[in-house]
Image 1 (spheres, rainbow, N blue to C red):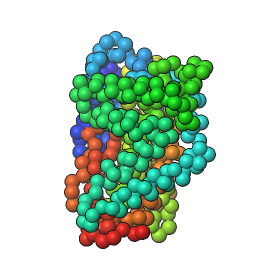
Image 2 (cartoon, helix red, strand yellow):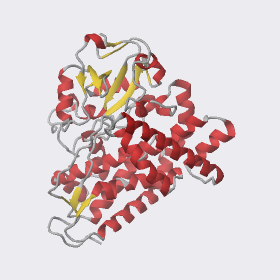
Image 3 (cartoon, rainbow, N blue to C red):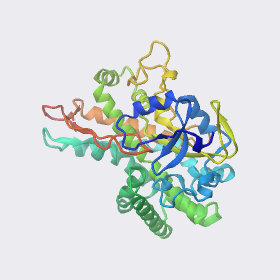
Length: 415
């Protein structure tokens, strides 16, 4: 089937009910033709199995050179989502190029490395909750802004050797690319990121350290395993992916626990480890809504649907986590947050060759975040203030998390 013959389902970054959107897509089949903002046609997976297949299918490539509409000039050069699908980093490469680049990055995120990083993660979390403890009684705190965002951002920037000034300058353009933006805003954001990262590279060449950023720069300079643009794009990928998704994982999981106090009690009394909350958070409100994009290298069949050569495929990771077909008999609905599940099936970190190399870091940060936060503020409560969902095709999450640290009636934090 060609897109010209199909009724395209429009994906809307402004939708307030992602569950309803996912349910409607599932009704249409396991693989559905859609229209992305800007009038760009693609296929989208709608359940767990079709998503898992697409993520690891050998005939779905990541390089834009496989995208027929792009190669034939049908995609506007100012399409707002180009910043998410274009680049020379490992996320947008295939085969030997992907393996070459991944070999430089993956060793920095092994279990041993992350275990050694654990005290640093704990230190960052403890400093953040200490700052929160100084909040005046009864004051509403935006926990996303003051805790969920800075924790992973500080950790990844220190790990990469990114100074505070560069980190601050990258925040707005990173957010702009991932949220709803005009073509002009998207282009400006992309240009800003490139400027900051190139300045950072020049600085670190003159002032090398022991961080991952320096290691990538030296791999470029000493043995040409990266070209200059690959260096920029991979720094960008690690910094962005190293915080954006974890921010939303932490914020959404805290919200889910506050809305389900019985679940929280099972964690606080030690019945279940905090890791169970992290895995259920990844399933229930995984931080990636739609993963853009893969392209059919040849005519490819997934779940009985033929994807013509050159067509793009979007993977619905959030919908995969809520797939009712993955719910065993007798367990709570997949639309319920339940840490007591025997398993929390999700694809939040991807699958196959492009499985996220930073999974151990994200899980470690989220576990530390939850245990530290609820350990310091046992009476944490949601405030009676609206919580705004992110307006994004790429991400699933919330834009704010207003809370009372010590219950709605104030009081003193636990020392």
